[in-house]
Each structure stands twice: as C-alpha cells, then as structure tokens.
Image (cartoon, rainbow, N blue to C red; front, side):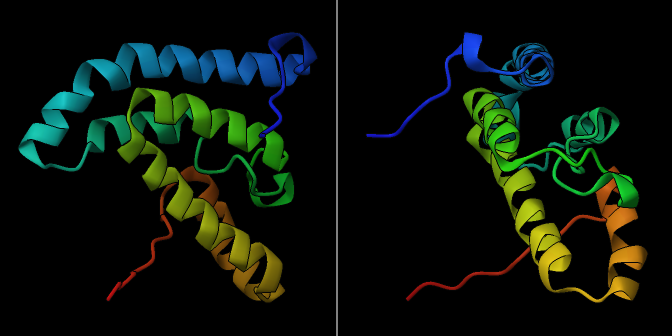
Length: 132
C-alpha cells in the first residue's frame, strides 16, 4: 500500500505550491483538456503558463535557475497536474527525466549550458520509446 502525505503533514512551502498548481489545473487545464484531446493538438498556451509558474524547473537546483525542490514536492505537483489532465503530466515528467539525468551524469559545462534554459522551459527534454 502506498503511503500518502496528508495535507496537515505538508510543509508550508508544499501547501503553497500544491495549492497554486491545483488552482492552475482547475482554471486552465481541466476546462481545456477535452479540446486538446479532441483536436489532437499540443497545448502550447497551457505549457507557456507552466513555464511562467516555473514548473519546468521544480527539481533543478537553484544555482542553475530552478526551484531546487525535493522529489516529494515534485510528486505532489505531478499529482495535481495529472488530476487536471494526464497528458500534461507527461510533458513535465519527460522533461524531469532528461533534466535529472543531466543533473546526475552531465559535466559541469553541460549543466551550465542547458539547465538554466531547462529550468525556465525555454528548452525541454524529451525521449523516444519504441515498444514491440
């Protein structure tokens, strides 16, 4: 059974950021998700708002322009985004995978070159997957 953190057990910072993302999901994602699904189009306006909120730099260290938050807080953010529309969480999660690998295995030169732009969402990580 998975353990969850109750609202009262969240830090003030976690409460603030999850409330912000919850409001964003309620006001911007949920009302538009069906349109983007139906049109099979990329939700660029929503992604632009996510950039403004700093959601692409959540786990990127502050020294590279990110928020430097922990994985638990990141999971709380993804939970709220997924509640709004699972496809939006996919955009953030693929970006996280790429930025995490760069943080963990990249050279300092690579980190300085890419992480600040990844933190703002100016560039986003992606990956390709093939299944049999």
